Image 1 (cartoon, rainbow, N blue to C red):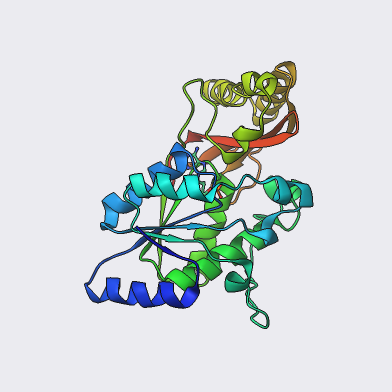
Image 2: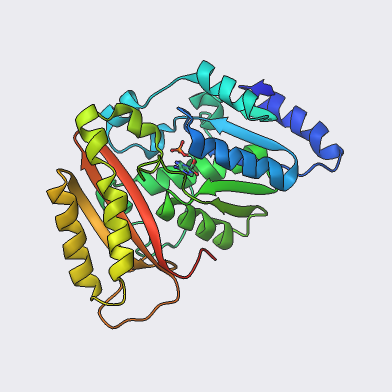
Length: 285
Ligand code: AMP
């Protein structure tokens, strides 16, 4: 595995790689890697034969300073895991490399309500920061494919929309959510759960499964109300549970039929905010 911290040396290396007609698949991360990240990396490698991972805790996508400061950082361990997973290139840029003074890296898209609902409602500015960093990393790495996790449903949906609107030459590949044996979606944030809330957190996935089982037999409104109650009874503080059209991210109304429907949830487990989702109908386009 080659590790780069500078844009220029990375670009030089990738030039050589591409001169061999090698396709490249890219997995952007914020580190504190777990099996979910590694599954993306393995998928990347199996699809193109060449995997590249970035670790960059992007300051522009955090809406709370405490969340940014408390975000787990463990580069040496991450690099070891990536090496074992046969990662070809690891890119660990500094903030100056990603956001050099004088370069306008902001991204402007027409997203309607897509970036204002769910995560966008509770984390103002999060998605403009996320799209900004993904666009910048795509510009720097120029991959054939970008591999992202279904775990962050609204995130990959917005990246797909960005690729579409800006006619970017990258294919988005979405990998399934990897879960702990008790159903909790793997997340770097799980490291910060106290034992008490670690044992309560699987209620998020249980709630989503109950919603999926009852989908069709109940109105979306009553499903949401029931799901919120399940989370509260489990000792979590739900922020939202939305049943949405997977394309527009608009809430499904009573009697509405859509071919791609997703239940998305965010809930606090003590001081840690967790998100998860489950497809109720259809599949990722
Ligand atoms: P993060 O480091 O949290 O920014 O995540 C980097 C990538 O890993 C994103 O595309 C996430 O959707 C993906 N990811 C995070 N957790 C999981 C998981 N449990 N299963 C699959 N992919 C995941």
